[in-house]
Length: 398
Ligand SMILES: *Cc1c(COP(=O)(O)O)cnc(C)c1O
Image 1: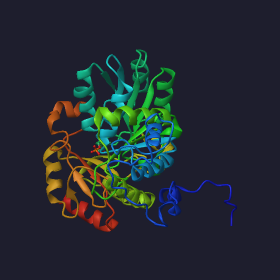
Image 2 (image 1 turned 180 degrees about the vertical axis):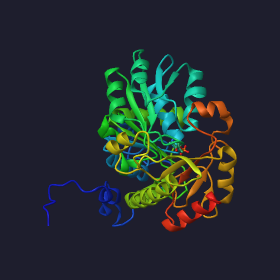
Image 3 (image 1 turned 30 degrees about the vertical axis):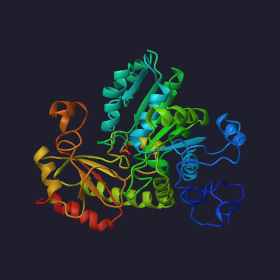
Image 4 (image 1 turned 135 degrees about the vertical axis):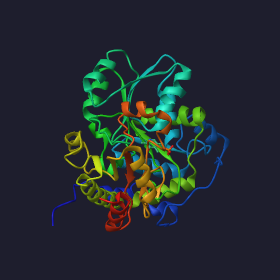
């Protein structure tokens, strides 16, 4: 046996144990859910010390709760960050972060391909308050460097990016941002800390939609941001406390803690099945193009192989038959559900041209790299052969 005494515990061990000692909760194996809105002070002086920030503790539930605090500690540990903050949704986390770090007159440089509502927050939300965003293709580092020659407060991107799974070089972009005096914020929802840890690659803050893989069971909405303790405290004190007020429920925090226990195990199975699906689609005559970061055919496979430890659970592919073929495929699946979202036990399928990106119009979709025949699969945890059979049958006639 190897000597592991000096080793840090592994990912799964930390996802199950980090930050909790049953001795602090009457021996309860599972951390209690603290369903409370406020906290009683032992004395006026104790309350006053809490308000002055001279004493650690709980005052009121909008900004802090013990179940939430455990989730935050655990998520920060898994991402390799100093501190974390959990919020009511992914958009709440992104919004609280950007509203805290930016003010009128500030400039953001963001990738062109973003989750739809992040794009809306930047282009239609923050712009109303004089915070401007320049959208650049982040696979073109020269274009990012050029955009950063004008002062910017922060750089924002997601990788792999929705819906065509473009991969952005986290280390390269973070280096450019740091040299320009800008913070780097990365949305790590698709990869999760199991497959990719942006902070170790140079990012300052990582945001998550915990609604997806972290929760993992399609039964909640939540979000998180992790990073340096001082920045996270500021986002809690401003972004959560009074800019958004988007507090996570203690019950939801508990459900994510439960989800985290199997995160590494689930991701391994998502990746196994997604790889099998990608291999099937790659050679299928109905498929014009496959997008899976785990296979060498992906345009940024070299970057993915460097910064991810697996291709992820999402597979996107373009059908030769265009829009009609996409709709036909969607209507013929019987095991997969037609639904947005991702990271659940159930396989989900969506057709961006008729669903999430329908409002774009065909020209705009083409410019954003979203062909009309593009289909996105979130590969679930069903038996791999059943997922494959469903896809083969829905591709039909070939
Ligand atoms: C879903 C999602 C979000 C938004 O999260 P919600 O929990 O739905 O608010 C942000 N980024 C990415 C990449 C997502 O997939």
